[in-house]
Length: 142
Length: 422
Image 1: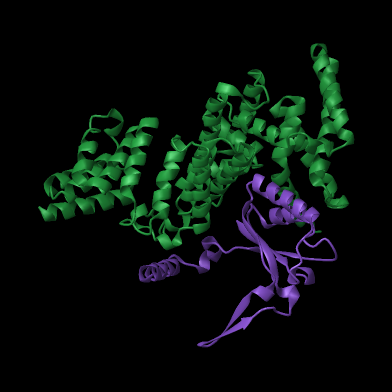
Image 2: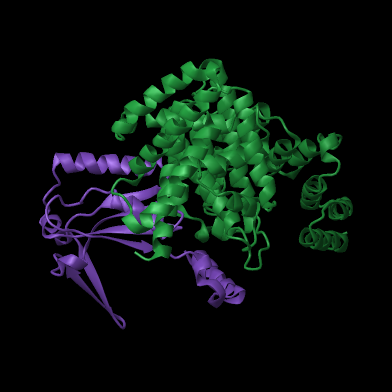
């Protein structure tokens, strides 16, 4: 299964403060371990939200809102995409991750990535076929 | 933590730690079978203790220390019976005792070399292919015997026996626990790559939903390939195999109909191909080129897969490049199946008549006589050339040779379409 591990933003990450050399080295080592274990599919760090934007959808209306955004703890500062055997395996890996922000508390949230099998019985062959046809049509239009 | 949760945590720790644990122990006790038993004993101790003590901060080091203590106990007991081995035992004991005090000392050793030695040992040519596959999944994948049995649709005792025999064979043949060097390396590496690709194909061939363990084999093979690429970064064929598997795996969601029926490459919905895996595959292929290994058999197959991955549609495909890659592959890996694929590529690139003459050259090949794809491809090419009568005969022959009923129906439909065009 695939999981996405998301590092929650902090005041430090939102200020654009770069991590120390020590943390960078530790994080690099952790990433290398993930790669060597064949677990890491992708991973990136994100700029502060002040360099980002949001699009709000309201019916047909689209409103663009420029960053920064205030609710720091709801923001994402970086992520990994991991291929693991179970959620517990992802938890075990992330327990070994250095604190992403040396000081104070920070959080990493682990979420499972949807795969076709996850829809199980509810996603009947007919429904799946329908979805595939839809995707094929979208593909044709491109 | 509830008992159930802690068992799942221990499973996860085991999956992460067991290959390194077994590899580290095997280096010290010089026996893979014994190393695995010691690691299993440590796991049992963890299962007994962790539910009450909690999971230690560094579970890997805990398991290692526990296993080493057991190793010392066992060796002492053995040494009483076997004087001859006394000296070796003493040496091993010394090593063990030195490292027990400082579990992190493990980390100072080149763990990568231990892991690589473990892979090479599990895939040693003295073992049968089945034994290599089972042992690799057990030692490197941390899979249990029941899991391996389910994945390969064989009874559990069969797998258990395979593993026991394999460990015994390794002991008896006194296979040294090391990374082969020099000329031997190429041969042994080929054996490792073969095992990994076999595991991948076993999972890839399981087209229907069925048991999740079978598709999980693809993930496991990919993981092993990626691990190997990290351990042997200068071996182009390792990256070639990884590239091949990443690109093939990228098509997983597109290659079967909801009812499990396979969809041919040409008819797959390319929007469902996994672009992340394609990118990873293409990156691995770049490493192959950088290492100057684009002529290797896995590299060539990966390069062919990459041509398809890059193409937005069948028409958009660079068939002349595929044709020349098949030319090279037919030289490196001469086989009737490769030759047939080469003929198809040439037909796509240069016209059905060119393809047909290459197919015709294969008709006397003994291996090809019962192979339904030969008349099926011939029928297709003949029909494109407007030779419908001959095409019909070939489709009918192909239908009589395949055991797959769905394929049979399809071929008979093609036969009657050809008949109607006469």
